[in-house]
Image (cartoon, rainbow, N blue to C red; front, side, top):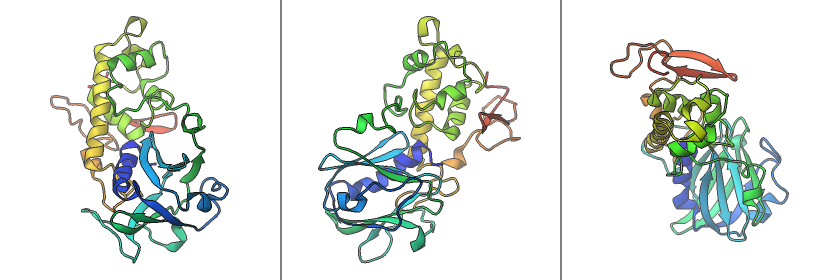
Length: 296
């Protein structure tokens, strides 16, 4: 499942083409993905001007000129590609072939952009992604959006906020970090990496990083810095590109080559001066990778 950096990378790849463009036509090639498409899906999009494209947690949201919001999730194998209307990809620097079977091209947006006609093609072999509408003025109360927590990429995420969010919580620290109601968009890979950078055990009680009355501590500050840095590094590198993920321009991200603990079970901990070995355990059905020596 693509994580926040992957979705942010896709957003940045699509923005220059989608923002400011007009949707001339929409090809909807099946009635559903993970969920049925909204009623009159193609009709309601046709003729609309795309005002902005944003990311909220792991969702892409296209804001249209009539107030409608198009919410998109990539699922496990969803990807976007950009093509010239007369055919031909617009490949990135690290181009790798992806599925281009017409059977998996479920939605095609035909756009009039400042640089000419373009196609935005959504391809999804496993069909776990989806596209839904947010009616005008109702994005903040949409069931997918309304309960999302703080974004982990802005200045608001600091040691003080983490301490307040986690105060008195008995859940394991990793589980608390994955709670989308607290912090929006964090996933398994980058939580493992952030906890390693912060030298904190994924099993420690979440409330233990907060001081009395939810005040900030050295641990909460370290963790906030680690979350922001690992997400920032992954976005800069282009995401993880694990399994089916690709950027919108076809480029393959390469942050997986920089993982410190994720999927490195049995290898030496890369922290200087640490002689531990990366271990794996299962928490809530997910693999957790960590160093039992330096993560306390």
